[in-house]
Length: 117
Image (cartoon, rainbow, N blue to C red; front, top):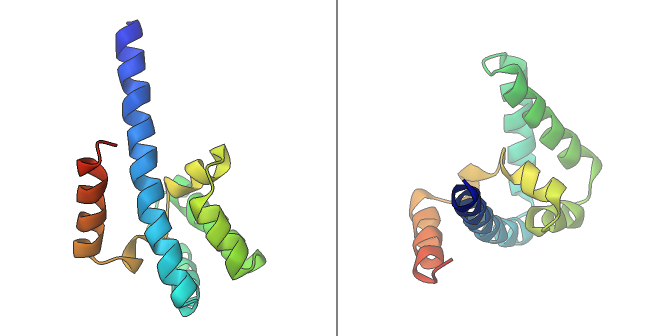
């Protein structure tokens, strides 16, 4: 049982590191074009109003929308790459996935995997 728990912890840590690598690239993209945050806010607002999503997903989207509305671009960028428990939790329901193309995302994940992380 101990080995299983340890293996799960290692796997979870690796998933968090992959997510952080993706969000670092997303943060760089937003730094170069802060209008991307406007697009994310608009999409979140539309998705929340649609009523198509589960309560838990809608709550996560609303939390992100509140963050985007009440924080500066710099504060959002810091949150995206922060290693705090709260930032890790927020990245699990990221609204920023569409910022990277599938190819960019694949490249980052492959690079991350080849580094043995």
